Every structure is written in C-alpha cells, then in structure tokens.
Length: 108
Image (cartoon, rainbow, N blue to C red; front, side, top):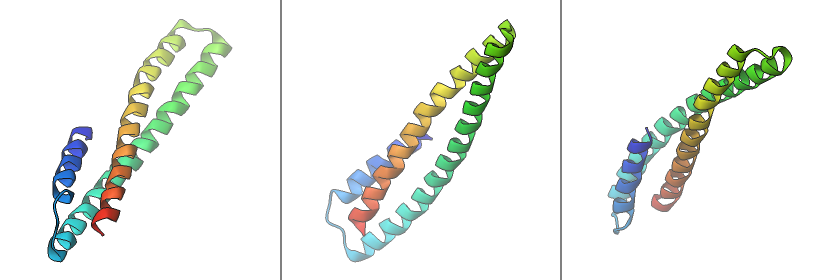
C-alpha cells in the first residue's frame, strides 16, 4: 500500500510541476479525489486494526503482570512485534494522505 501511495505522490509531483489547463486540473482533481477516498478507507481500516492490536497487547501485559505466565509473556512479545509495524505503516498512510490533501489544495 505504501509503495502505491509513493508512486501516486510521485505522479502528482510530476503533474503539479507543470502548468495545467483548466480541463486538465479538473480531470486531475477528480482522479485525486478518488485516490484520496481510497487511501482514507485504507487508513481507517488500519487504524481500527491497530487499536485492536494495541488493546490485545495491553491486555496481555496486564495478564502477564497478574499471572506471571511465560506463555502470556510470549503472547505479549508477539503482539508487540505486530503493533510496532502497524504504527509505522499507519504513520506512512497518515502522512501520505496529508500530502495528497496539499496536492488537492494546489490543483483546486
């Protein structure tokens, strides 16, 4: 997903670096709105999943503190292994969508 967003941002860099006619601006704006909607949807799905993983991670930490089981500690480590990449991925999605908003304002 991040690769696709980087490619689209590169595409928008190219398109917005030259002077566009009103018709080209309108077409580019429509394309940009579709892509922003697509990436916003992806962002909200990853936010929900990230929160669920965060809640499970905290619950496993609390269970480890309460029961002291090695199995629960391993579950906590595994969930942290998922949680950190989710944060990084969501960070890239959020910043990419914010960048697309600036292109939307620029083309508009």
